[in-house]
Length: 240
Image 1 (cartoon, rainbow, N blue to C red):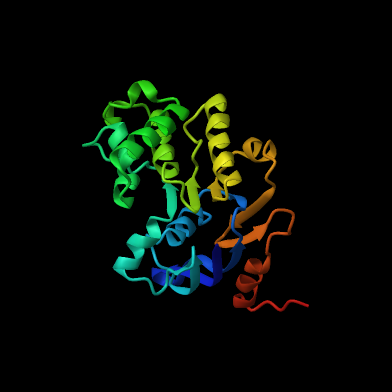
Image 2: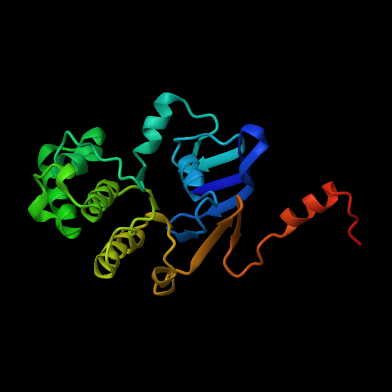
């Protein structure tokens, strides 16, 4: 489902945001990605969703090789995923209904099916009364729920969510997580970045991947410490 092999993302001045990442996520897994701000979570998500390319290494998602993908294939690829961005990426010249319906329209669903699916998912995120509102008039938490509904409505193979409960209270966070769990039970792979340790601890899904200083390791593993030795060597110190 997701395969990363020797992935680097490097910016100017040899600044490695991601360093030699290796990761395999299987179909139907539910995975939490945790790490401090600036650790590389958002960069990793942008690479996995095709919005950025890795500097080197191989990235395969839903059987698409994202290193060699062309414009036509990227459109096909994005129809297989649902993405929840931190900054929502909503269209403010359209209503809540129209924002959520967009993936279904792109996929060519019939008008009646679109109405049924959108009404159901919008109600499930608690926004039935706002379905005809312009999202510009909604609160941050409400906008986040619209973004989540849009990501789920077409039942994608893979859902990638960047802090999907960050602007929600505990009750709504639990309801949103139940939507992700339901999608996962139907076979959808779910990857969620979060800072919320309580959310992870209360979940039955226990695969937790941590990212720090551009490197990833599974929960329970020791954090790589090789990063500390290079400066010592450069300083001319010998390590016995």
